[in-house]
Image (cartoon, rainbow, N blue to C red; front, side, top):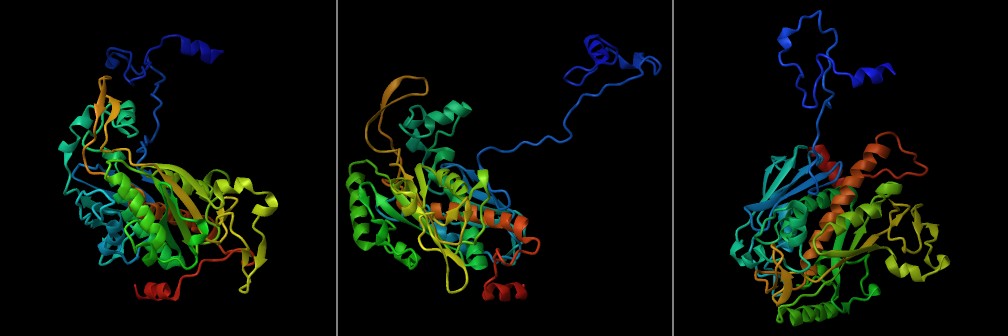
Length: 438
């Protein structure tokens, strides 16, 4: 009651919300007059977290740049030290992602040559933030003069204006697939660490273009190689279906139209125990990462939606003990993840990509000042995004697994493991020798 009456009455020395005194001159008061001073309650530390451009907790990646600005890139924070790393390690995947590769990709000519500006010294990572930058050398902002005032149907033009009230009108800005350069560069780092540390392999390939669907049993995921995937311009490991997919893209390309498709991704030799129950399940993290890529519209792993046609007895993966004494599953409809945690089987997932939004055909739209109009989009765009999306998917999967591996070590491997149930991850002999030499 006393506190209520005190707060309802004006008093000398009171402070307003802005922290200033309600008195005109504090020096007019003597020490005897003011016995109690009040200070504004402000937080000791004000933290502002950037929204939308950072992924990961332990292996944290922030991408930056826009499609027609000075360049794009990434900052990788939390990368373990003493990992051999060079620009050539990143360039392999950047070359797989770059435009102008073939007639079924955008004709924009960019070498996408990367430069590492920090975080690497004398050929090894230092544990400090790694800064990777790729300049834009073939931007053509004038191609987007009409689109600066008219919204491209199904593109992010309108929603960016709705959210920010301003946007980069030269190309797609941050919504452009050019932003994924930072993802692919950082993903290449993660892939190298995963491959050397636990023998983990991440391979993605095109399994559908428009109505050309590669049968699921057509590819042996245990023997699939990168060379098979890279043997043709559409990145389908089956030559016969690859030709059909290329023909489907060519058909719409010459008409100024586009088609979508599906990328399948597998992970071999994934460490067991990655992922956490409830909100941070491994498949949930993979879904978020995959669906953050431009043009994605669907995600499924394991049996996916097809599993809904099965009964429990048909769908369950029965356990057995293999010749090495490891607990395995006879089938893999769970997709290598059970209860949100990796079980050591091959992880497999599929990501659906929509047809490219920007097409060279007349469409109805509206301008920024809400007038109806017609638009024929100019610029250089992929008639089908899925061939170039393959390294993007691999990168995002690698970033998830790298972050989860570091989380697993922090929580479950810092102290002695339970040898009856847990499998400590052992370094391959080549990595043991490398660590000894550093």
